Amino acid sequence: MPSPLSPVDDAPASPPDRGVWGRVIRSLPDHVDGRVVAAAWATLVVQIGIVATGGLVRLTGSGLGCPTWPRCTEDSFVATEEMGIHGVIEFGNRLLTFVLVAVAIITFLFVVRMRRRRPDLFWLALAIGLYVPVQAVIGGITVLTNLNPYVVGLHYFASVLLVALSAALVVRVYATPGPRRMAVPRSYRALVSLTALGVLVTVVVGILVTGSGPHAGDGGAARNGLDSEVMQHVHSWPAYVTLALSVAIFVLAFRAPTSLRLPLWTGLLLLTEAAQITVGLWQARSGLPIALVNIHMVLAVVLVAAMTAVVMHQSLPVGAKGRS
Image (cartoon, rainbow, N blue to C red; front, side):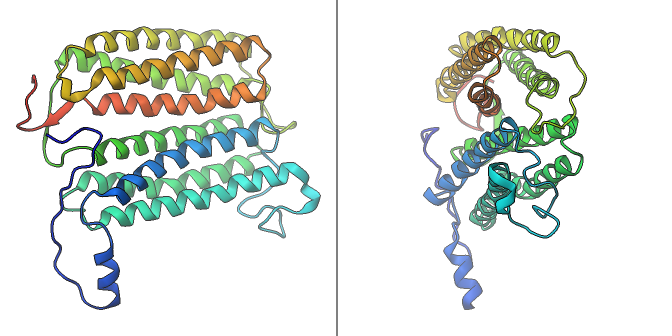
C-alpha cells in the first residue's frame, strides 16, 4: 500500500490530441505527480498567507488605505503617494488576491485532465477557484461599508472556508483514488465531529471578539457593540472544550488502524490548539499587541486546516485492511 505522504500514481493514458491546443492539453498532468502536489500545497500556503497579510492591514489601521473598491481611489487602481504607508499596505494585500487567482487557475488546470479518474481533486480545485473571487468581492464590500465589523468577520470566515478546502485538497492528492470506507468506530467519528464543531464555534466566537476589540482596521470604523472583556471569556469556553475533545481523540487515535496515521494528525491538531490558546492568553494579558494578534489570527486557520486533516483521515480505500 502506498505511503499516506506519497502521491499515488493513478495515470491513465489520454487519447492523443492534435494541434497547438492538443499539445497544451498533453502537457498537463494526467495523474497525480509532483506538479499537482506542489500546486495543492501552494494553494494552502497562499490561502493561509492572505490571512496574515489581511490581518496586517487591519492591525495597522490600513483597512481604508484604499478608500474605495475595486479602484484604490476614484481615479486610480493603484495606491498614490499621498495615501502613505496605509495605502501601500492595503494595496499590497489587494495585489495578493491576483496571486491567489493565479494559483487557483494553475491548480485547476493541473487536475482538469484527470477529472474522470480523480473527480475529488477536480471538484475541490473548482470550488476553490470559484470561491476566491467571491472572497475578493466580500473584501471589497468591507471597504464600501466602511469596515462594518460583521462584514469584516464574514471576509475572514471566507478565508476559513478556503483554508479548509485547500487542506482537503492537500490530503486528497496523497490519497489512493477510488471508493473509500470508514475505518474507525462510529463513536470515534462522533467525537471527531464534536471536535470539529468545537473548532468552528471557537473561530466564530473569536471573530465576534475581534469585532468588539480595538483593532477595527481604521480609527473611524464602527465596532459591533459587544463587551470585549466579556467576549474574551466567552471565547475561552469553546476553546477549552475543544482542547479537551482534542486530547480525547488523540488518546483514542492509537486504537485506529496504523495506516490512517491518526496519532500524527490528531497530535498536530493538539499542538496547534495548544499554541493557539497560549498565544490567545498571552495577547489578552499584554494588551493585544499587533504581532500576537496577527499570529493568533493565522493560527486559527492553521487549526482549521489541522482539523480538516483529522476529519479526512478516518477512511481507507475499499479493500484495505482496517476495522470498519
